Image (cartoon, rainbow, N blue to C red; front, side):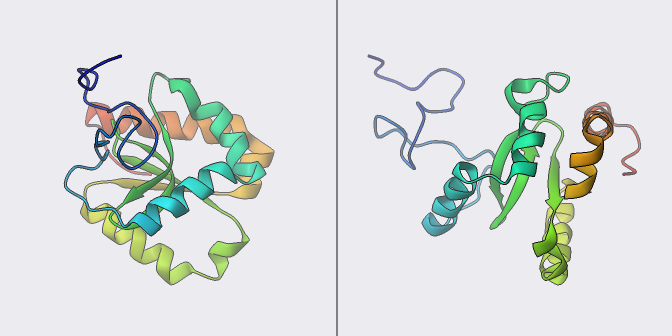
Length: 153
């Protein structure tokens, strides 16, 4: 058994304190995470929609050009569907619920943008009907964001 966390600083795993009471570092440094929000993010990970599952299969395990994505990541008090830290890129899937919360989504996008993050939105239907195109758009955005090219999305 290890006496200290792994050298890469990610703790040992599950729970707000990690498996052996060690703190888990936030992917976005310096943010405080509300325990209720953390619990909600965990629930959303366990109860992914079919569309989220479809996209996650294409993103998980650094399959997409070596870019690592996280699901239901808390950033600035918001839970984003998918997040690539290396590219500072959030990916949001817009299902029916988003028609009822357009102002909230717009506010979230403004906050994330002010943090230097970029947000890509995809309607659920686009993912179901054209997954390869969606995945190529996400990969292109990641590459642009990591090579310093124009950030037009």
